[in-house]
Image (cartoon, rainbow, N blue to C red):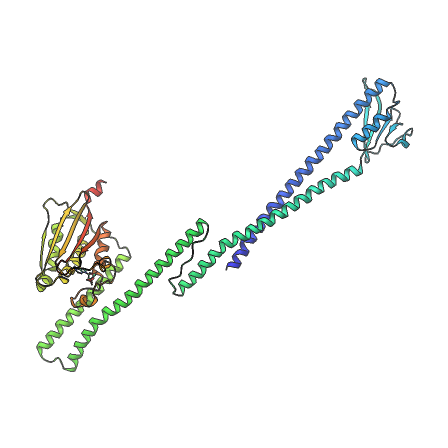
Amino acid sequence: MGVGMVRRILLSYLVIISVTIALLLFIVHQRTAQTFSRYLSDQASIHSRMLPVMLASYFVEHKSWDGVQKNIDEASVLIGSSVSLLDAQGYVVAATQRSAIGRSFDADPALGQSIPIVGGEGQVLGQIYVAHNPARQRADQAFLDDITSALVATGALVALVAMGLGVFLARSISRPMTAMAQAAAQIARGEYAVRVSPASGPEISALAQAFNHMAESIGRLEEVRRELVANVSHDLRTPLTVIRGYLEGLRSGQIADRRSAEVAFEAMYAEVTRLLRLVEDLRFVARQDAGVPLTERRAVAVSELFEDVIRRVTPFALAKQVQVSHEVPAQLPMVEVDVDQMGQALFNVLENGVNYTPSGGAIFLRAGATDAHVWLAVEDTGVGISPEHLPHVFERFYRADRSRGRQNDSGIGLGLTIARGIVECHGGQISVTSDGIAGHGSTFTIVLPIPCLAHAG
Ligand code: ADP
């Protein structure tokens, strides 16, 4: 592609340069020729106007043409052509070519120009004949030819330099393009780490940067895709294996008595619930990725949100013997949210709190407001999150401790991703603090803009 592109760019340069230079040469040549011939005819007309006047006054002064030969010789030198002076009867009285003197003269208009000499009363005193000078004409033509060839040489030189620059320019455009085309081909083959180096020139540099960003995003997407497939297949496989184990036990008659069968059904029910939850979470993330907008926002009291989510988590909390309580200041402004979604976000955070807090622990939901924001906090007294995991807990499929997560019957690392997506959709932010010491627990804080202020602004 590189060579073809250079060739195409060069070809268009060649056409532009040739047309421009040809036009320029044509115009300059025409103008020079015109100006030059005007200059020559001006010169000639000066002489042709001066000479008869001078000769007329000579005749008036001397009453004859006697001794005029000297003047004709001078005029001849001045004009650069042979000059003949004829008296009123048409006989040559003085001439550059002495041999013609005394003869009658037939003026040939093709070879020269005849100009009458007129006296003060309008009487014709004679005429002057100025022959064209072929040598002079040849010199004039040679002068014009010189100018033409100088113009052509300059044009050729300019064309050469322009083509040289064209080659340079075409290469500097085509080289990064070729590099990008090769990089794109590599990406198509799955080599996502490839990057192009930023080229010279702001536009191509911007293109290279955009390309690198694109390569990076594709690489990241591919990584997410691989992770997704790996995680999902792993998380599907585990409950399915458990269910199959129980089903085989039932089929082979190993699980025969009613008690064992009940245990088996309970366990299978739990696994199916897990599977459903997984599928639901995936659906939610997919919808977030597709940018499905929030449907129903309404003003709601934070205490209402808290009470609702505590009601939902109570069965798990009771089972784990974790105490959940809340406290909301009376004057706290309402928040404007999609209640179902914000409830889901809070539920995910609170459910984690229950999962990662040992029996006997407690979870505390608090809220408060600053000038422009309302904050909701979920504090637990659980295992905490160590500093190396802290920046990652909101990432997809991230689990600080995979084995523990599974034992605690947590999700697959999408709960906080979903919570963050929902909060950000509301123009808010979610963050976490923890010193990573077991028993000190973690605090998740959701900050939401106060709607009336947002509207007033
Ligand atoms: P999961 O579905 O595995 O709970 P989340 O996205 O909800 O995934 O959480 C990601 C990880 O963050 C969890 O696996 C866990 O390691 C850590 N985590 C979340 N909440 C808490 C908490 N309250 N206490 C300790 N660790 C937590």
